Image (cartoon, rainbow, N blue to C red; front, side):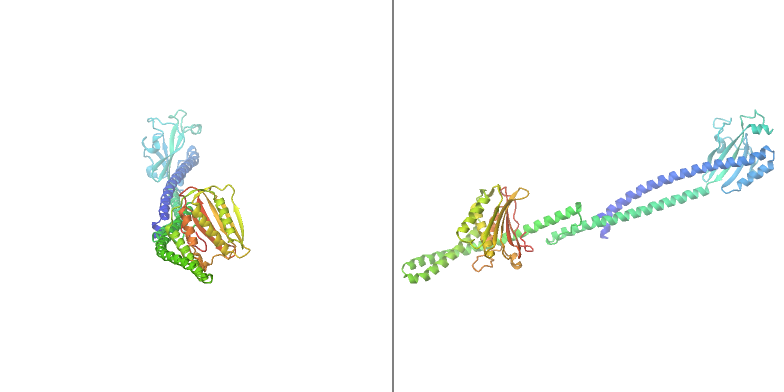
Length: 502
């Protein structure tokens, strides 16, 4: 019942109506043409019949054998399709007839068989044999008999008799057989039109159901799932036509919506964690300040041997203060002070700084920086932190002798630039990928779990996108995408999907 209410059924009904109307008009035209041809052939046959009848009777008339001529006329009337044969004189009196009871009767000039010759008055006109519709199922044929030399030589008629028309031969032919043929032809045409309409309608319905009804039904079902909050089931793209493009566009918009939903969820989570981190940092910062102050004062009064324990206290307190500072940086999320920046120069500066600090001593760094890279609007101080986090993470994931590759390039559409930081490590484990941007999540023994979340937040504030691709064979590549124009773009939350941040 759903298919009968669908668009395929409606289009099929419309096509069926149009085809039915077209075939009806065509059938009427063909039937009318065939019927006209049938009656034309009937007229021609009738004229041949009456000429044959006169040819058979004239010899007997010239010889004066009237009874034999009457016998010929009666025998002609007994043939299939011939209903009546009559011979009329120039006054319209029936001289011979296949029905003897009609002999001696007179046909008036207004009779159908006489009207053509006497159309201009009572004086007969010369005309060839012709046919006329005696009634609905009978065709009448008139063959005028002229006063020819043969008639004059037989001694029957003088040369000056009348106006040359001695009489007529009338023949009535039955149209029953031809009417039956026309009716049979009409039935065949109507049946053929009906069958062809049914075939075309069924074919159109099946094709529309497959090519249009099913894809549209999948789109409708997809919108229902979307309205119910299910964003994880794309619509199958079965073709490259408009329906396929519509399905592909629907899937892309659904994916964008899913990303935006994940982004919103992550932002809410980060905001909650940020508020908690800010409160904890403020509560811890004051005791840490007191511990460092008293430890420094205590250190002055101790011997060099005793200072080692106090130095350990001071070192751990400083580490805690560094963690507190990172917590505050994560929580505050100050707006970036953007200005036109050469990303290539920033990359070179960060790598040189880390190389001086011996953070990259065990790996080889390859820089593939695009020449004439467009400047981009960003906060160089904040992005310095992003680059440090990405490069240091790559170095920590790369075994000794491995390679870190840093690539910059313009996007293919020219609307932005992207930065890739790749390592040759063992990749991110599958169970970790979905949490890699979660605050405080870390697999390092000395890590805080804030490096990548802070980097993601900075990229997000710049209108960009931070994502990653990882495999056990090729390592991990983090990609930063930035728009050239301020405020363009929009970073979906890069929660991992199938091992890849979307």
